[in-house]
Each structure stands twice: as structure tokens, then as C-alpha cells.
Amino acid sequence: MDWMRAQAREALLHAEEAGEEVTSLGARVSLNIGQLAGTFHESVDEILQELLLHERRGIGQYQRLLKLTEAQSISLEEFARAKIRSEELHVAEIEKMLRRRGDA
Image (cartoon, rainbow, N blue to C red; front, side, top):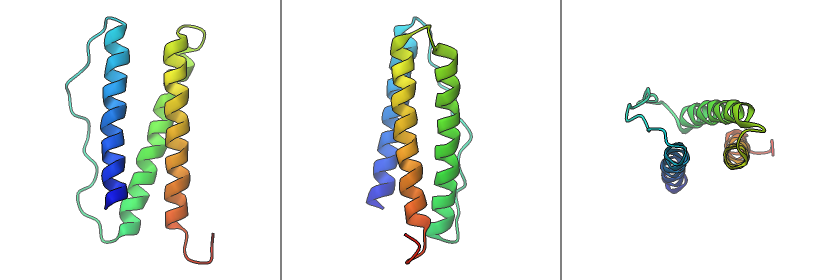
């Protein structure tokens, strides 16, 4: 539970950081709420599988941002790179948790 709470806090931090980047460029931040993840799971493994999917989607979005900003904004490039690295570490961590004993 502590790990999942820490992930939620980090997701909020990422949203705040992204909002700061957007507003520093003079744009506005949408207040729309995205699609919510599933609300019921039979097992912890199902929760971890959903988290894995979410992290991979995040990597894809940050990679898209990186492509859009390359040679345009060092600040946004570095922001995207840092987030990609962070999400890749999360994927590795979740994959380790999903391994069965003896698989590590």
C-alpha cells in the first residue's frame, strides 16, 4: 500500500510539473479529468498489470513530447527525458514485482 500511495503522489507531482511547464510557455492547463482506471481487481497482480499498462502509456506520451520538442526547447526536452527515465524505472520495478519467486 505504501508503494502504491507513493506512486499516486508522484503522479500528482508529475501533473504539477507538467502544468508549470505549460503555463511557463504562456499556455493554459486543462482542468478536464481523464479516463479513470479500473476500480475493481481480483488480485494484486491485476492491479500491477494495470499499473504496468499505465506506466507504458506514460512513456509513450513523454516520448511523443520529446519528439515534438527536440531542437525546439531544451527545457521541455529535459523534462521529457527525465519523465521517460522515471517511468522506465517504474516499469522495471513493477515487472520485478510481477515475477514469481525463483524467476528473478
